[in-house]
Length: 147
Figure 1 (cartoon, rainbow, N blue to C red):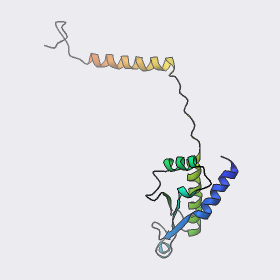
Figure 2 (figure 1 turned 90 degrees about the vertical axis):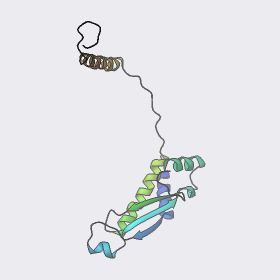
Figure 3 (figure 1 turned 30 degrees about the vertical axis):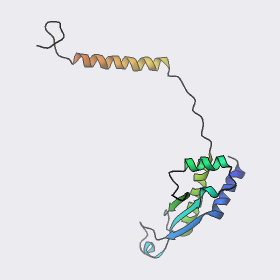
Figure 4 (figure 1 turned 180 degrees about the horizontal axis):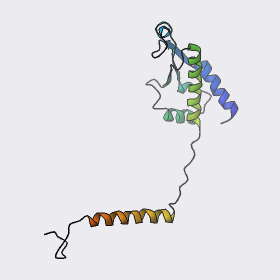
């Protein structure tokens, strides 16, 4: 992806992200009880008009597990004790998630199993089979049945 495209997405996220602040849990002493440092950020994926229709639909399918019922990507950050730092982290994560969803997946090249690997696998199976056959009962008359 080009640098211009990356910057365009980062600018869009910065302008269109909606943030809500709440009290965080975890370490911080009295700070946790007094300050709202936890950031919950969300934005509608479908409103990214600078993307093509195909890119938008690809992004919605790839992010389907992260979208809420209204089609909004939700990100929660409570990494630091600072609201400003958490806000910045949320914006960076949102941009990274979008960029990752838009990245072209490499097509898998089919490869053949080498002959030696196949022979090793089969010989291992033969050895295991012989081991299990030897665990069988002892036959005294040659019929294969135990007495």
